[in-house]
Amino acid sequence: MTARARGALAGPTLTLRDLNRAMLARQMLLERQKIDVVTAIERLAALQAQWSPSPYMALWSRVRDFEKRKLVRAAQLGPFSPKELNRE
Image 1 (cartoon, rainbow, N blue to C red):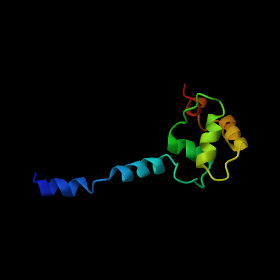
Image 2: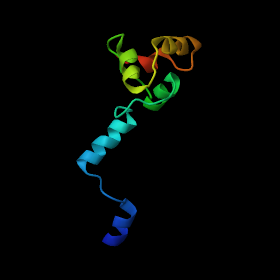
Image 3: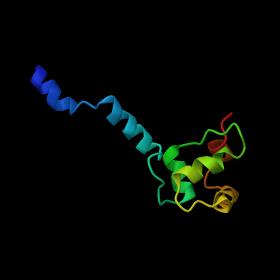
Image 4: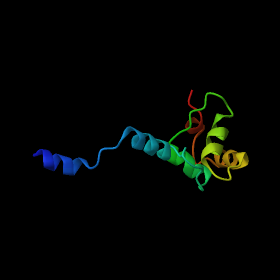
């Protein structure tokens, strides 16, 4: 394969800043999202929480109009396991 063909397949090269911003956006840390709690947890795959208030604070910083009771209710209904909220 020629160098030109490899460049066409690889696409543009991201700068370190672009890569950083993409990672922060994927983690929903650039701006608070208008999504529900369960969707946020599914997108994040899990929330690391060595300190019990951490899941609440992590979601509050990512989800617009976050309410603690919505997380508690979702956990009670069971769409995700407590292991997804706490990883020790």
